[in-house]
Length: 189
Image (cartoon, rainbow, N blue to C red):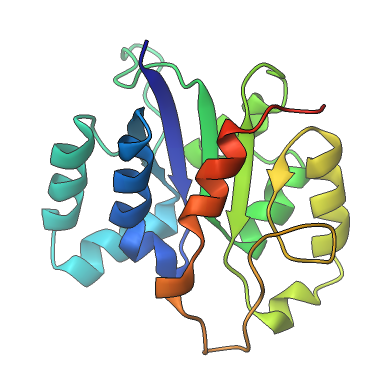
């Protein structure tokens, strides 16, 4: 039986390299569908010079790349997810998600997922050390973890993404495999 994974990518540098995460998930047997935040979509279209990057992801996944809500009269074009991976998760998305905002398709999907305890949700952030000090981040992570999200920030509670100095991130070191390993672990909440 094929499992469907929604990869929700926010506007951070690893989003430009989401192909790495998609291929790694596919190698583990996941049918991957990609959903971008509006800002990540803008990066993909404007930085790539058109829709060529989106076309490549559509060809790789076999699904349209979504970034906006559909109209109520339109059919869903993606299969229902068995799990969700928010990667990269930004400070903006993390704090809005914890506060219950659903003003984008990406946020709508991940806020709804909190009410579906059978559906694993993993978040792998990409934030710098200055953002990691923002006073809204720690309570947001606590809220999400309390709701069952496995939020992979290296904050002394376990393995995860370690924030880097501003403007010194290394997208090649982004731990896609850690996130995928975590999806395969049994949930404790």
